[in-house]
Length: 373
Image (tube, rainbow, N blue to C red; front, side, top):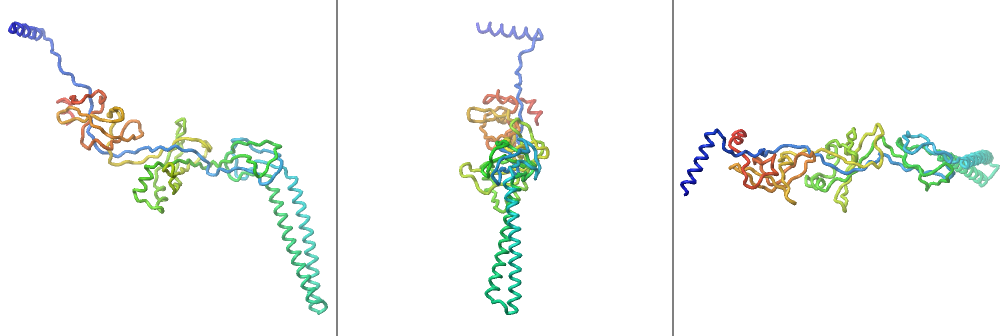
């Protein structure tokens, strides 16, 4: 019986061969591999930031009075010295005129006292008046001089108060919200607006704890911070909508005190703002490129995620794949990972098709091995 079966099978195979039909062949799977090596890469470090004017000034009046005129509008670009608000100056003008009149009276009194003193001095030299009368006239003259000084100070104070009635921009910049209206009664407690000096803008952000630790471990001293800041790369500001600000910024400060709650340092990046496109309060992302040297970089599609673990398929000498757990860091470019553990230079791993590999599966074939060699 068995002899008959084998004879039939042999006949079928012979018949297929006679009909020139090919037998099914093993198909090579579509896998690609790479040999791991160390290289240098530039990583974009990203920090959440908030924009602030170089000179953000709260505008408040120095004197009380009725607001007579608002000379600017919200969001208006103004220059240093430009008039912003005018307060009723009539009382201040009257105070100035009264102070000037008092000064004139004090000067007249000073002249009279001087004449009296000079006369007594002349008479004393002729032994006509006593030293007591001379001393009294001298004291009266000195008192008159002091009264003139006081009256002159009152005039200057009145002039300053009159000047305070016209409020000008202390810096060039852009006006914020104006919560007051013409006719309002204002005082030194009233906030008229916020003026943001936006010729240069600061992006404030917190430096992460990892960078703080790296600075500490590098042994950087306090007097070396300025040198460290000067050598930092230029920064880019990316707005929330993804728009990249065209001008680059430079780090200008790094606080020397670590925030106990967050473990971070506050830093500022200075950005030129020639076109006035940046405003105080804008939020976005600071991007700074930092170079990493001698690291293993692999494509993201070579990494297979299994719950909270990451693995790659390493190609063994017999061309089969075995799963190896790795730890990675994101490069931020959307394409690659840095492998911090699990792989060594010279290892061969599966790249394209890694998600379809099973443990022990053959991923390289003789002709592929030959091509790679």
